[in-house]
Amino acid sequence: MAPRNTGKTAPVAIIMGSRSDWPILRGAAESLEALGVEYTASVVSAHRTPDRMYEFAKSAKARGVKVIIAGAGGAAHLPGMTASLTELPVLGVPVESKALKGMDSLLSIAQMPAGIPVGTLAIGEAGARNAGILAAQILALTDEALADRVAAFRRRQTESIPETVEDA
Ligand code: RP5
Image (cartoon, rainbow, N blue to C red; front, side):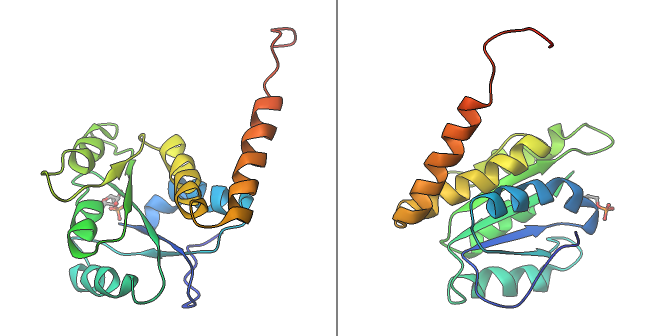
């Protein structure tokens, strides 16, 4: 599955600093698909394509985007810079880096100055999957059918966890 940008309006926009982030960020896409939430996915780099980042963030609200999921690794400025350019909620996913195992990504996404928040998730795949679920939960505040799907997802997850350690 390649990053998808259909150009149509979707309530969630997934952006990432590089195509190399997609194997992680696709976890967010899979969560959204499991919950029946439309999304777009595209490469928007704070450093390599700053004008694209500016255009994306400035136009997102008018295009009908409600929640932005932004993933990046290393000097991960994309979530914070995007958050500085829009009032939409931004969920940041730190992608694991080679040199510092994603600690650089985590700290550069989480340590925002007061006034410009980024909701920061865990490093890597768990963070990406949870970003998709959290975006759905935010949208579910004003969408009862989606709230039912989120609740059903949580019930299925609970029921899938065995109590015994047999065959573990
Ligand atoms: C960041 O640099 C990207 O988000 C990616 O995690 C990292 C490495 O990018 P590539 O060199 O693989 O394109 O901007």
